Image (cartoon, rainbow, N blue to C red):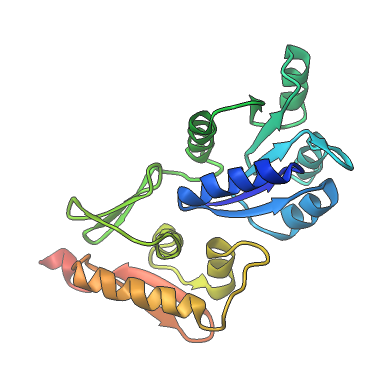
Length: 229
């Protein structure tokens, strides 16, 4: 899952980013409305976490702009303004949820999980292919009910491929899902993650194969003949 955090408090932004990355999420951070708009309109995000009080305006204006162009990416608003009028205003501007500062990490994660379960983000909690299954809510991979532990980037690659099972996922799309804005990406970084993931799936006898589509990207499909075994 890819999250855009819009927060001008550097310490809070860092804390949020660390907490989200601990949950295997890719995070981009913007500290102003201008920067947030550039990222939001150019990138692909599953959820926006938006602070109200930014140095160049109210974070609600970003949500309003996105809604005007029919971008319905779920948005969670963070603010020190906790009165009912401001909560209602946030929702009226298109926010999907509201969290007043200060807040606990556990509550933030619970609200993000709830947003992630909405149809606009993901149509189902579980994805499966062959003997492999992925619980998107708790980000757990299993092969025949045995948990398969994967590093964050390999899990993100698998999630993207599994959600498009049987269809080619373009290389650029995978890069967007696996890496954050401004991260140093070596030429073969993605290929290395896919290669290691492929070996682990084969070793676990997951019943799926990852194929490279030359010059395009990758696809995941069930091992031929598995259904007949």
